Amino acid sequence: MVYTTHMAIKRRRRGSRVYLEEWRSHREGKKVISKFVRYLGPEGGLRPKGVGSIVDRIQHGNSRRAGAVRLLWSLAEDLRFRETIDRIGGRSSAPDAPSPGTYLTDWAINRVLDPESATQLGPWVGTTDLPVLAGFPDEAFTKDDFLNALDIVCHDEPAIAQVIDHSRDLDIALSARWRELHPLPRGEKEVVAYDLTNVMFFGLTCPIAEVGHNPDHQPRPQVNVGVVVSRHDRTPLFHFAYRGNRNGGGTVRNLLVQLQSAKVPPGLLILDRGILGKRFVAEARGMGWHLLGGLSKASKEVRTLLDATEVPETPVSFVKRSKAGGVHAVKVRARLWEDEREVVVYTNADKAVADRVERNEALSRIGEALTTLATKGAGWSEAKLHASIQEVAGDWKEFLHVRVKRGGATPRVEWEYRDREVKRAARQDGKYALLCTDERLSAREVVRSYLGKDFVEKCFRTAKTFVELEPVRHRRERRVRAYLFVCMLALRLQTALRWRLMEGGIEEDAVPEFQERLLEDLSRVERTEVRLGGQARTWYLNVTNRVKDGLKRLKLPDLLKEVSLGPGSGPPL
Image (cartoon, rainbow, N blue to C red; front, top):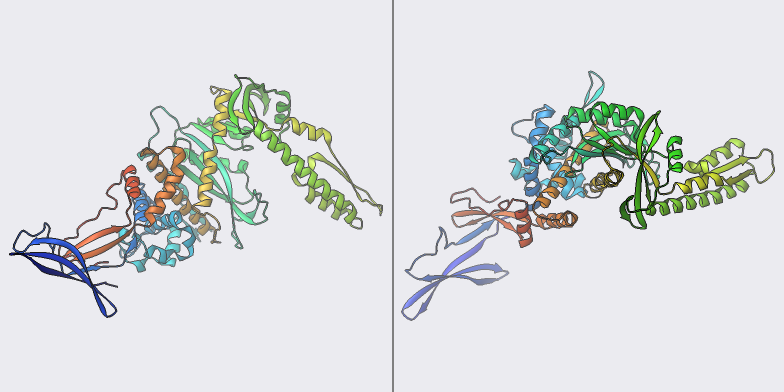
């Protein structure tokens, strides 16, 4: 719709001189409303500076959301998202249509700004400046086009009955570009952390989605997503998609291959508890990588080590302060995996309290359930009773002694706590063992590095909270893998913005709030084109001082610069 406003020049006589004034008029119902605009000076005098200062009509087109999408598009272009995807995917598109890299870049921007509109991706893009930035009309961005673009990342190959996944090569190229723009400080080696998270499927099936362990104990199909994150700049370097029943220990071999393929200079790899094993340690050391990870208490060797090691609470052993006390650590030599190794044992007063409360609460609940079962299952078969006991006890069965009596006597189930096991576990509450193959690090450095790996968990939190990784709305394996890649692109954009803000002087603790507020402010910035007589200009609306300050910190002060399109330009958009 084009709005028309009539401009008029009025002559006002003062004594022997005539002065000119510019007035704007528009119709409201049957009335014509006139409003003074500006004073133009004496008749016959100098005209105000600028061509077309006295105009008789203003035209402007519809506005588009421009601020946030232009910022993220600029970051994506800097990181070469489109170029990398189109080059590695190896598939060309028609010259009159956007490339797959363009579609997936736009999709990643949508995941950052408005993930709730995922089912209306095409219409959402049409309300923004993304078509203008890409150089294609709004109708070029349809749902089918976005879905088809996923096939450049991952597609079925009928000839070999396999899924061809390019996400590994894409991750390698994109991470190399990141390091090119943001190299490590001279002499510093890469320190990365690896962890897994589960991604739920809601009512959908997928070949790689299987029921597995998750914090919410929900029996739903899921895939496990692994991410490698750099400690230096908190950027995600690589990601992996595994079947939902895979645990951390079964995923690390791919990790070493990925690091080697990416030619990442060997440094320190930090892993979550329970992943380290004798074979993996040997393979990693053979590639030049040092490992740091927690040792599982399920191992008899580790439990014996924890029982035999006392951690004194002294200034020498102090590591850091926790909510309920302090963290202390010592380094000891112990036999592990048929060899003498240096192991760090640390205690965490806060975790000791939490472990004790969690165990006591769980065992108390299980005890009540078993007492009820003893009477309720009086007429059940032994097989049914054993199955029910297994279900009730779960992972806590080592702390219980349960016996099923034969015959019709009641109660059929007798049980008691294994006090010795409960006391043994209590001695190990808040006590943990860490293995670090770099023996040059002190006990304090080892523990601080391990506890400081929460930047991986924050990465997952960003992916699930802001990018809204869940729910997965695809069911084909190739589409699921490609969708996860798009979400990782969005995560890369979030990280790039965060890093730019830190370089712009925002303190690390203040970055999340500043970043969220800046994107909200930029989301209100709209672009429109106006015609003033013979001139056409681009205007950005709702540009506040806070927006200008943010763009200045990002070293993008001209991102929303208003420009003149010159006389004779085409009609407004």
